[in-house]
Length: 367
Image (cartoon, rainbow, N blue to C red):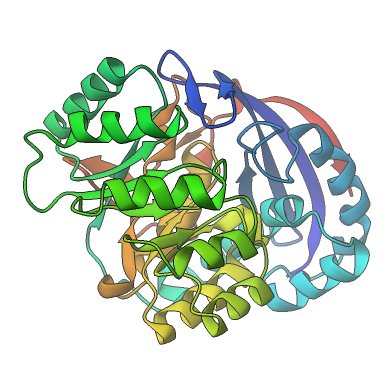
């Protein structure tokens, strides 16, 4: 089997809410997703999707994806997409960095591998270890009353895992968390996510004031070094996200005992091929993970859901249903969601097909 054609499309995803807001004054209502379709000489097609969460969140820019794909495409034509580790090496040699662009191709290769083997991707990643996976829901940064209403609505819908966005003044965030915690049912998992916006002293003040509240703090400071410093005096478990961008970063965090949990965003690390290595490393170290992505529709959700489903339950903190954060969908067959849990299908590959009526393009084509 050989890749004969690479085509890319874009689709606009509109947030199903007033605004997706988080610390630092960052707020988005629309996201541009890129869908890659690989075609082979045997007539099979594979699809991948990458959707950066706005240009100011991580070093991933939707407008840069077409240029990256143009650079990578000539190196992939004629290669066997089933050899995913070999393809990852080819892409790394062809283009330094830009893991998010490589992820779109890597996901399409895994989709092709599954279809060629007539197996769902989670079987190829180790087998289904969870029939249903717990979902977290993000409570966007807003006025306290609006956040309380969002939390109540998600709880009513069956969710028991919540990622509460922080980013007011520290004292206001402390007061807000106290209000949100009133009447909190037992057994809920709460993550307070500041997206790296605090200084160490601010993080310490917040954690000390809420030391009695069962809470995980996610990426409290911008840099790895600041988060490590805070971790040594925190009253809460620390989860790392933005400061981990490579396997080497994760290895360092494990050596330094810098984290109690991590967010494994598949596109940030370059797709499923590198992410499965990081997943297995964290499983061996006993580090629970939120397995997800920055944003996306049904293709992106299906990809990280395959990895989550093949992760041992003690090390899967949760995942999320990004495709249901949007008013528009770019694919058919996204994972099923019910009462705060998600299930992947047993269809071959990623189990989804693009809805070309919702896509624009091709924006680039090679082969």
